[in-house]
Image (cartoon, rainbow, N blue to C red; front, side):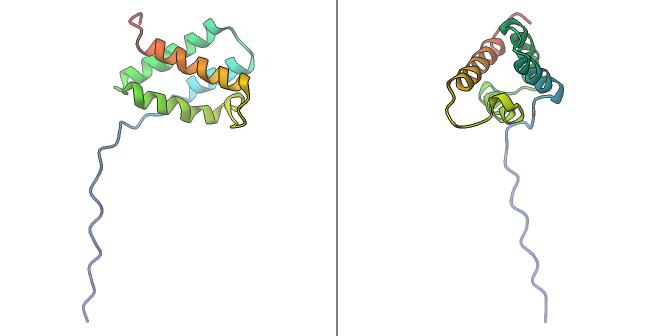
Length: 106
């Protein structure tokens, strides 16, 4: 009796470039939020994150996905209860990231 050969693996898909925000940048952002630092200081951290994203050829759309995934690592940004302060903070971070991503002042 002959054995059946296993099916071939599925073809590779072209996924967006794999990049997660550097742990150091996310940790800096977490600390800045926890310590209630100024928007200027938070923006400086986000600027580093955007530089990293552009250096890794991350599209703005994929970078936005990365940003939102990293929110899960920052307790102050977690939760889905619709807290207005938390939502405002998330929106502010996304807005600043978009502004910095497209900024030409590197």
